[in-house]
Length: 470
Image: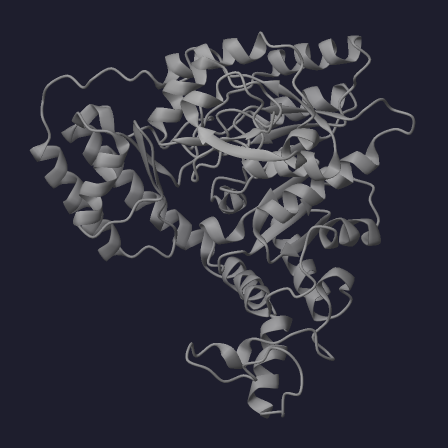
């Protein structure tokens, strides 16, 4: 597969043209990549008016992913999330009531900022009270979604879309096909934050990518699981989305910089060639290595590693239940750090490791050695019980008992102040109370902060909270 962006920039760098244009480094500098860092010069195309090399590269990506259209972002999935919500709002029937989105509660804070910028309400889908890792994970069953859609319709508030995060930070995958069928039966588009799952299209057993499973709009953080520089992302459109080229470009431009990174664009372009070449084979090898490690851990310390297989698990994220070792996730992360292994995410209970097809045999060997040593050293006593799910269930009950919260936009843009968490009880949450990662809010902008939030604030290290000024 050709790489038109990479080829153009390399030719330009080799010509040693006198650069009387931005950037100010003029192709020279201490990083070594400056010669390839350009701006929208003649022939380089323009990201939000693409009709040359960027358009050709995006067409390659759309072919690889099997989408109706794929557009690049150099500002991560956050830009794509806002753009796809903007497009969904434009698809809403004329004369509809105040827009409302039906969304699973484990959404990234980017959704809240999009709601503030675009001024829509969110009706939350909550996890079951016994859902483990409840802050990060929010399983939604098709029957529950149908009930929620029927309820909103009965109130005269048909949502302009259903929004899901899948996979989530702990590796849970929603039943996208079943949920898409429910959405389409109700005439509502399905939007999926697939930031952690770009690779799912390239599984040897067949694609598990949301677009192939029926999602209408989807974003992927290419940089999370593919060989792409940080910030590289895709906005994917399914065949049902009848938005013209200008509308899609404008939706991205509305939330993007007019100076997109050409280093990131080259990375996305170069990834196309990698994906079309041997990526599936490298992905299969990575999965085999990860599966071997998971089986060894299960034999050595049962229950430590969450399963990699199953309809509701993604196969490229090793999630460890640190409580099995009598540790917190943060303690396990520090122990691995001391052995030269840095994890992706750790919370009071879980630790997440994210290898990729670029992970070497040596990487896996070091991880295996470190985990075996920690398992051997860990206490064999029964781990302390985890209260995260119970605390979140209590919080969910308290929040759902509240009257309808203030508009997210009103709360985010209101004058605000930072106060100690204990003093925030009874106040309106301004900026979302969240740790990052996973960037999933404990309390959402516009909600009145209940006392039941305090245990989770403490568990996730949130000592101060932004509230609306009285």
